[in-house]
Image (cartoon, rainbow over the protein chains, first blue to last red):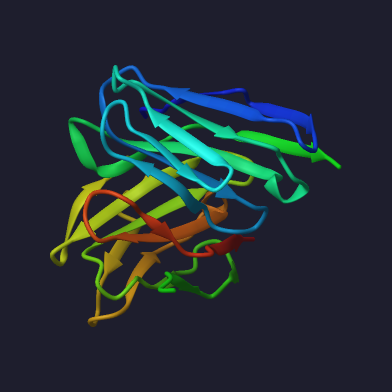
Amino acid sequence: GQQLNQSPQSMFIQEGEDVSMNCTSSSIFNTWLWYKQDPGEGPVLLIALYKAGELTSNGRLTAQFGITRKDSFLNISASIPSDVGIYFCAGHDAGNNRKLIWGLGTSLAVNP
Amino acid sequence: EPEVTQTPSHQVTQMGQEVILRCVPISNHLYFYWYRQILGQKVEFLVSFYNNEISEKSEIFDDQFSVERPDGSNFTLKIRSTKLEDSAMYFCASSEDHGEAFFGQGTRLTVV
């Protein structure tokens, strides 16, 4: 099935560093969502984006909806140990808003 | 804060048995979903449900699967005759519209 290209696959950083990850699609998307998943838990919504060019922040997290509508990035500034987890991008293809298409996730490890 | 709740948190069942996974979506939401995640892999869409009927289903959602909203609050996923490869985390999600989807904590299904 359709999926998003999410990169990097994993990151290992020092506490305090900034992090950037991104997702690209082969088709135009109407919605981009960024989720964080801790082991054994459900995905937790971090940021939702609805318009091309939209830049939205949630604390130390910032995400943008690419102007081509085929990509999005998530930045985490000044990482802390509790940022550890898997970050997923997801979105609604412009041709079908009845299901979310998912990236494969970025696994983030933070060294205190 | 409203949340999606799922029961049970963990279900172990013998191959060939029927299982019912239960979800209580957020009360004012109109769209309901089931996703699954095989350990260490991406989140996969199973089915979306709106206005008391399935609006979209994936190729995974074959005749062994069914969903029901038996009353005003519950949303269930039934697997008629479980197979070993059905072992996964099953997530229920709900949304107010075709935008932000909020996920439950998941049910870990183990088929032995």
